[in-house]
Image (cartoon, rainbow, N blue to C red; front, top):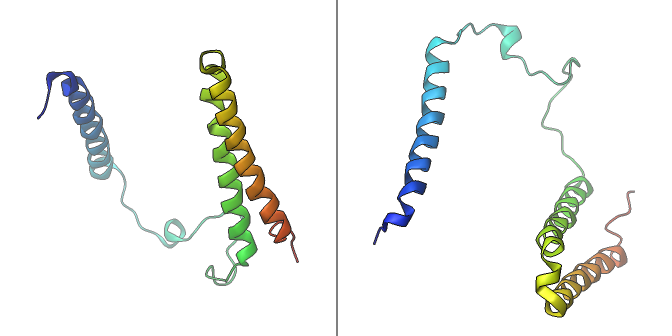
Length: 119
């Protein structure tokens, strides 16, 4: 059942989606639509394109990217703990210690598997 306490959120959602749709439609209608070869060509930092862009990458690149995201997301969980560590007390400290220990175990496992070594 829809309650009145969620009504302001619904209004905000409708306005946000309406604004996005309005901006996309208006820019599509009033924007220029000249499709020249230069505009359709891919642009990469001012460097001329050479060859095929679909070259295979080493799996090490993707592994490094995934590991960066994994350990970067870990840091996000430190902020709420750091802002509330007095209220959380020893329970919060021990919970964060377990959290860090699990990530440290994962890090040591990846190091043992030599996931960080480039060939």
